[in-house]
Length: 126
Image (tube, rainbow, N blue to C red; front, side, top):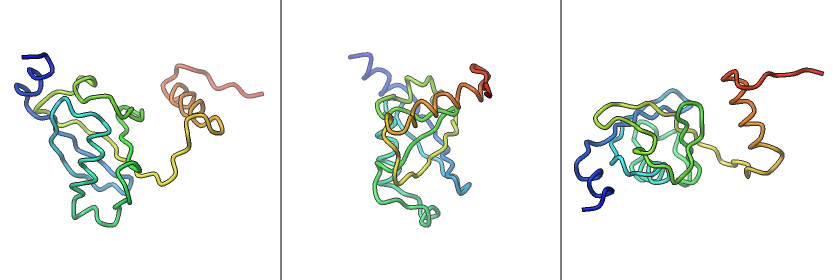
């Protein structure tokens, strides 16, 4: 049995409480080996009735935020060291037109702002 199968078959599910910008929440259960991309796809496929007004046209429009950072599609819940059986809160944002990481310095701005908010970079004014 591989380590991957061992984690998947023996671990309790990871419970995610997802919060929309509207403030609506819903809890979902996932295998620890589920990727962020698969989480958004499964949430889209099983969109809760109470989120009807917030429904988007495709799973690609959904992004997860955990500890103030957008999650890359391939990162697994296990890699984030989420505790199986415990509830973890994440934000689920719906964005129709996410800019490409290189367009207009968007990626740099997001990284810089995150650093400023965490006190890693000092904002300088000229």
